Structures are given as C-alpha cells and as structure tokens.
Length: 359
Image (tube, rainbow, N blue to C red):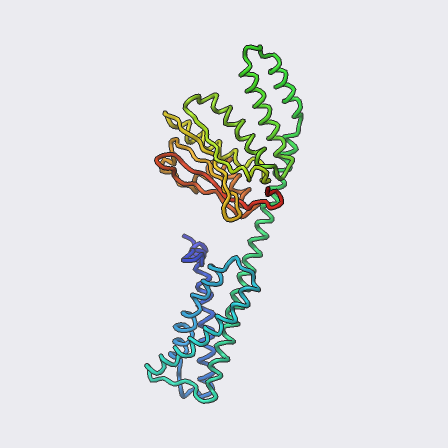
C-alpha cells in the first residue's frame, strides 16, 4: 500500500486519515499558542503545557466532535443560513459546558483558572475559538461541495455529449427500419394475425427508443406502454414460465420522467431472474408514491442474487450501470438491489415527483 493511499483511508463518518491529522495539527497549534502566551507572561517560570493539552485536546476537541457530526452529517443538506442561526445556540451551549467543565477539572487537579473580572476572558476566548474553528470547517465543507459539483457537471457534460452522439447515430435512416417492418407485417398471411401484432409491438419499441433520444421527459404512461410491449415480446419467448404483474398508482400516469429508466431493470429481471430459473417466475412492476417521491421497483421471483454483491452487479452490466449514472446525474439518486422473499431480487430507485404534472 502506498503512502498516498494510507492518508486517503476513510476512518468513520467519511473522514479521511489526512483530515483527522489536519484537525490534530489545528488543535496542537492552538494549544501551543496558549502555552506560549502564558509561558511568556510568566517569564518562563510557570510551565502549563499540561493544562494547554487538557484544555484543547481533552475539552475543546471532545466538545466539538459531536457538534461537527451534528452540522456536517446530520444537517448536511440544510442551508448555511439555517446552520449559522443554529450556531448562536450551540455556540453558547458549547462555551457554557466548557467553562464549567474546565473549572471542575482544574479543581480536581488543584490547578488554577481566572477569577473575578478575568473570568470574562474564559468566555470571550472560547467563544472566539468556537467561531474560528467552525468557520474553517464550513469553508472547507463548501470547498468540498464545490469541487464535487464541478466534477458532477463535468461528467454530466461528457454524458450529454455522448447522448447527443448516440442520438445522431440513432436518427440515421430510422424510417427505413420502420418501413421494412411494415413491409414484413404486410406480407404476413391473415391467419398469422398474432405474428402481425408482434411485429407492430416491435416497431413501437423501436419508435419509443428513437423518441427517447429526442425528448428529456415523457409521461409515465408512455414509458409504461413501452415496458408492456417489451414484456409482451419476452412472454412470447418464455410462455407460461413468465408471468407479469403491474402495481401502478393511476394518479402517477401523467407524471413526467426521463425515458428508458425502467427498461434496464426489466431486462435485468428477465435475463438474470426468469431466464436462469427452470421454473421461471413472476415479474412485478411496482410504481408508487411516498414522501413526494415516485418509487419504482421491479421484482422477480427467479434465480435471485446468487451471492452476487449489489455493487458488483451495478458495475458489471451496461444497462444498470448507465441507469445508475443517469439517476445520479439527474437526481442524485441511486439504484438499490435487494433479495426478494422467498426467492428472486428487487431492483428499484426513487425520484422526485413532477409537481406540474400532478392530477
């Protein structure tokens, strides 16, 4: 393992080793400043290095850690204005606890502390230190978020460029394909009407695939129609081995979503679930709403995960990995993969509802 990889190692709450070391140096610096100031004012006759370490490493750092978690983990999504207002309360509480705890420890040790009017220095300096340390923490957090957003925008621009190139490729002579399918359909004898219907469904899937390269959002009912056509064609291959159930809230049908989000999940359920099971199984397409979000899930009762790690599954297939990237770029969301009971798998995701299209 290289030196760089050691410093980049994550410890807890996403904190890296080098970040923890930076905080250690930060407190060490202020402890040194505190010791140096008191050593100088006493002409070197009174060494209180131990008190400096107790004050900064044992007390200030220990009191700061839960507040750091509170602001940068628990309230991570809250706006900075909200956090700043809340600091007025937690800052006062932090100083109050430090003030009385430091005096309690010093009394136990037989150490000294400021008395009389001097106690206000033990309010002002810790209050100032609280403001300085959290100002640094917030500035660094803002820097991290900015860099993350820049990286996301760069990846999104690259993905948009690739999508544009793919769209241009998909538009090359599309009518030739549809005309050919129509010609094949017209040549099918009248007694093979079912075959004619399958060709029509295949043409519809190609048409929707072309539409997906040209439109950013489509009504859910159109996406669902495309899914139904795909599954109907798959049922011709599997026969009674595959059953399909739809659990869709009718109120969501006019919601607009990015096209082709469900198809990779359907393909995964058919390929890795139903096809690998001798008995086949049932595919359930579930679309519900909760907490102002649309929840999509494709459940199958097929072969199951077979000890595969969900993270590895998202990286191995083109369909799921591309959908995972699209969800992240568009909504900051991700795909979840869970085992189905008694057998099979559940693959799903959640995206915000589109308020303009609510019934």
